[in-house]
Every structure is written in C-alpha cells, then in structure tokens.
Length: 181
Ligand SMILES: CC(C)(COP(=O)(O)OP(=O)(O)OC[C@H]1O[C@@H](n2cnc3c(N)ncnc32)[C@H](O)[C@@H]1OP(=O)(O)O)[C@@H](O)C(=O)NCCC(=O)NCCS
Image 1 (spheres, rainbow, N blue to C red):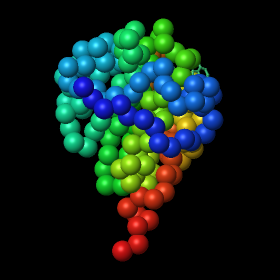
Image 2: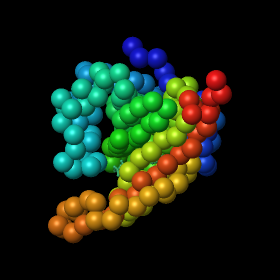
Image 3: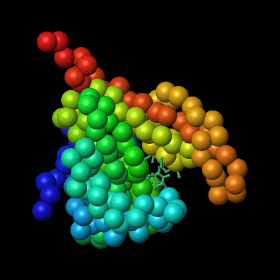
Image 4: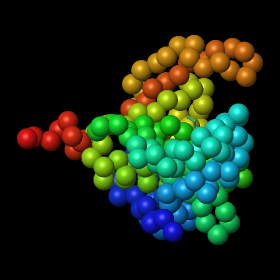
C-alpha cells in the first residue's frame, strides 16, 4: 500500500483543512496503474471528455509525473496529476467527483502537492486554468497561486467559442535555482 502523503506546508487559507487540524478525512496517497480505470471515469465526469485509462496508467508509472488520489472507506473522491522538470513543477489536472465537492477534497490534494514540491526542492509551480472556471481559480488562489500570464483564445469551448487560459504560478523558494554552490 502507498505511504500516506501528509502535507508539510500550508499556503493561503483553506478553511476545510484548518477545521480538521491536519487529520484528513480524505487521505492522500500515490495512485497506481491499478487505479487508472476509476480515475479515468472520474475525470470524464469532471472534465469531459477526460483522459483515458491507459494515459492515466502511464502517468502513474512515469518518474517525472505523479498521480495523487484522495480516497477513504467510501471510495475515490478526487485526484491530481503532477509533473516535475528540473526545479519546476506543474499541476496538470485536478478533479473531484461531483458528489464529493465542497468538502475540502481538492484542498487536501493541493496541500499534499505543495508539500511534495517542498520535499522535492521545487522552486516554482505552474498550472493552467480556463479564465471562467471560478471554482478552480478560487481553489488555486487560496493555495497561493497567482496569475502569471494569459493565453487568449486558447481553449475551444463546448459552444464552439474560444476561452482564455490563465497560467498561474506559485513561488515556493528553496529550489535548485536558489542554492548557493
Ligand atoms: C475545482 C474543483 C477541483 C474543486 O474541488 P472541491 O473538492 O470541491 O474543492 P474544495 O472543497 O477543496 O474547495 C476549496 C476552495 O475552492 C473554491 N471552490 C470550490 N468549489 C467552488 C465553487 N463551486 N464555487 C466557488 N468556489 C469554489 C473555494 O474557494 C473553496 O474554498 P471554501 O470552501 O473555503 O470557500 C472541483 O470543483 C472540480 O473537480 N471541478 C471540475 C474539474 C476542474 O475544473 N478542474 C480544474 C481544471 S484546471
């Protein structure tokens, strides 16, 4: 069984996590290829058309990527995919099952991810979000991410319109670029 990933660093003001004082109702562990079918189904429900099970299984097995899942006795609630390159990281996706939203699941995933960034000496982390995705933007801002750049007309929307992508960045510090040799 995967080790429990406990967040070791807090950003922003995530009220659910504070209320539980570090004892997570949604333990965060590393996903494995065996979780891929369930993660893929969850992703398709959250961000259609979602990623296929083979794609997610590959992410679970790659050394520069990591899939974190939030699961408890009631089952799988959400997951996040992280990517590492040199002293930078990127959150490639985060998704929570509809029935599990607004209970702090994504907050726990973000805290675990940021904790890992600290452990891996990541100096800054990036992510991309559609400008109109208010729940995700609010989550990211509470986690300490700030808008770094805009890509206009980047996403094609369901109604065949175009939407702006925001690139958000979190400066963590203590990464390779700040180590004096
Ligand atoms: C965005 C998403 C991951 C949030 O998951 P969640 O587990 O419900 O989030 P949390 O309960 O941890 O909420 C954390 C913060 O996010 C923000 N948030 C979450 N849902 C929100 C909503 N519907 N409206 C406004 N803000 C919201 C709030 O700031 C919230 O803090 P608060 O509860 O103290 O106000 C979830 O809505 C989701 O899976 N959406 C579809 C997939 C997606 O858009 N992913 C991001 C792609 S870039």
